[in-house]
Length: 131
Image (cartoon, rainbow, N blue to C red; front, side, top):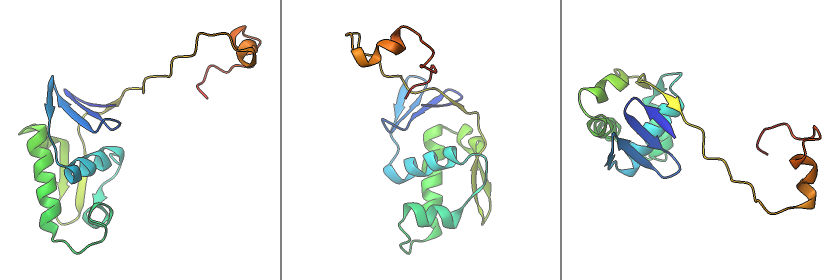
């Protein structure tokens, strides 16, 4: 789950939440937002977004501009404009706050299992990391 200030984006559930309110975002704008967040360390070029999310089909740049507008509207003005920087004619970059929450870990089965006994007794074979 990604925390973007008071906004939460859950990629597993494809859910965008602002405060306690779920926000509806159409599929392509959602994918564009997720891609911008996952690539927040760089500017994402318009051509890359068009190729990736419009399958290389001929579409007008206006389709991408509308998707970005939908994202900004969903994030709430003026915050939406402050979270996604536009390099006119080149691309976009997510510049807002970001924090990633760890995915919930799998709860171990409490039933005894002979193959796990060495790990349960701490003989040094278990590194403490999930497998």
